[in-house]
Amino acid sequence: MPFHERNGLRYYSFDVFPKNIMQAVFTRRGGVSPAPWSSFNLGGSVGDDPAHVKENRTRLFNAMGKRADSIHDVWLVHGTDIVYADAPHPTSEPPARADIIFTDNPEVTLFMRFGDCVPILFHDPLKNVIGIAHAGWMGTVRGVVGAAVAGMTSHYGSDPKNIIAGIGPSIGVDHYEVGADVIAQFAEKYSQDMDQIVQTKNGSTYLDLWTSNALQLKSAGVEQVQVSGVCTACSLDDWFSHRAEKGKTGRFGALMALGANL
Ligand SMILES: [Zn+2]
Image 1 (cartoon, rainbow, N blue to C red):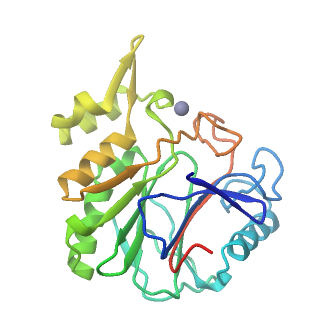
Image 2 (image 1 turned 90 degrees about the horizontal axis):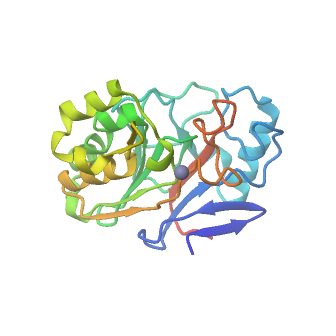
């Protein structure tokens, strides 16, 4: 089963990663925030009381048996820049602006927030590296997973064929209608993928972010890719969905660290 529960928190873990990697994408259950952020909101810029976000974050780190000050997170900007986190990031300082974060230090806990955009988790068991990338449609069209694989190769010496990737809970094609301008940008860059990543239904056009990122990973040489197949907009009891909740919602968290899930 991909879903697990600990201290009242429910989270998704990929089967594809080895047991010595801590990796969890947390559902919205088990926190203290009221509607529309109910209840395990980890986003600090969505209107929720900062005290609730802080309590939720404390619960997250306690549940996973990690120190809160081991965190290294980033300020998401829908780009392809990478942070190589050699040490935890002091919470008193603003995070760097980036959408990809890696570490090979077991003292670092990687953390990122989502609310429809695609979490992509990475691991190279040979180089003992982990990472998380954030891919909305903009990150996807800009090639964020290709940039991540190139970063693992150049910075850690990874061979793409040893890299394992997991595509996490996020908005599925059934709920992701997009406009002609978005389709045009994908067509310009990924013309060979279009028949697999675009669906048309009753005159509306839908984009498949999971398949687009999976195809980009394959073309970057990554052979081991697991797609969770969990759509955030389909199960609002479990996930925050910016699209399905018309922007009035929270953010769920993805966490990754070198060291076994308890
Ligand atoms: Zn859906």
